[in-house]
Length: 349
Image (cartoon, rainbow, N blue to C red; front, top):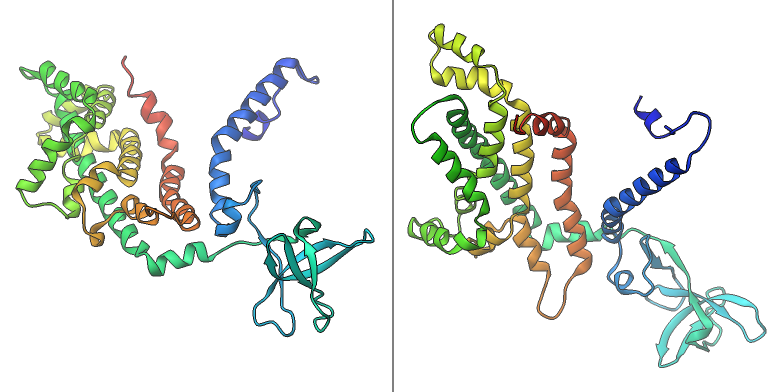
């Protein structure tokens, strides 16, 4: 059934112009959405020299080298145009100005020849620079940054699900004076950007001594108005008769919340979990404000260490960026089936 959608046409047996426009539009959307990600992934395997070359190449390529007798280091291979018009593969010893000293790898004992640089063309081959991924694990404490981000993301997501679900349960199931005002205040906080409350929250965190602690990153954003609103809208669709029947059976409110409401709200909780994981994993501004010691850096702050004032190690930065994308992508793959169900049932009736 899913495969047939890729070949579906407006009229059976013939290709209509609307089919061509539709598939061209969809193909353009796929390229615009996944093209930059594919470029990022392939560029993460390039060497520093390949990243700055012009015109840029899509696939990771490197200069071919050859070991020549009498030379300690491997020499770069070039295709050299000879005076008679023929082409010959030669190795470059060194370049001096607009001239390059070349030697024939098959005859290393012969005297080097001078070749104008415009008469040579580098020989390239597909090569993956795996060191872009292995070196940061040793030299830049990437494993520690990854563990800090994993701890912050997992703990913050669990706390967010707990607090937001309890608030949503109260605002959707209970009837009490001031309920509308409380809901209005929750929704109103959605319009307040984080830059407005950054300084007051920082002063509070500093006053209780949580600076340079991962809990300073976790606790301030534990309750999110987006999560409360999303879960409340979903819980409004739950059957009230089921909750009233549990109360008639003398079930406590905690038991109703844990054994009835939470399992029924699993799709909305999965959506909120995905959002929370993305927020916490990619958070940069707040951790940058409260974390100053490298031992407690999260992954996004650690990636900033690859950028210096005079030089940026782009090959490492791209590789570690790919590493940071993988956990969120895996979470999305496993939980994406809940997104449609959760969001569809959280709209206003």
